Length: 208
Image 1: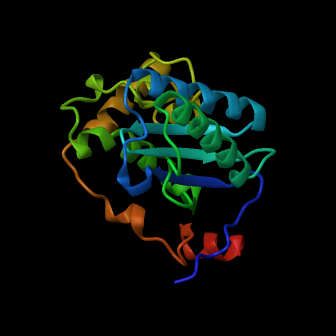
Image 2: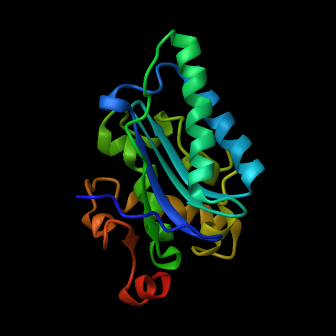
């Protein structure tokens, strides 16, 4: 089936997934994770997009992004090419590091923001490399607890959806995550229309 043309415009909200080519590891040590996060922050500042959540797994990257002055293609091209160059130079490798075109679903932000943040943060538990989120360093979960300064994550909007009081909001965030700690694959985040959209019929019609 032919790929659909990607819909891009300022303020678009995407669930982005990029895998290693042939499921190879794209992060081999702590330095690799840190370099990717530095580049993520660099392009966030350069292209003025909003980063709501992220998780870096050994063989894939999952990002929640709202675009600003630049479209998603430009953001991801810069980010992926920059990291690939670093990776090949370090490991003396060649060829494609990432698997083809990254997957980007245009989502209805108000309806899916909270759920997607939680789903992304629980990825390490579903995949099994750790038993608690505290044991996994490479996600924006720690930003919501005030333990991560870069890359800059837009946590305030999300916490404000849980409570106007910051202390209470963090507590409710942890409770919110805990509610689905034992859940696996969440089908509702894969109910994509036309390979590109996640949202109500009205949302999709307005986008079209």
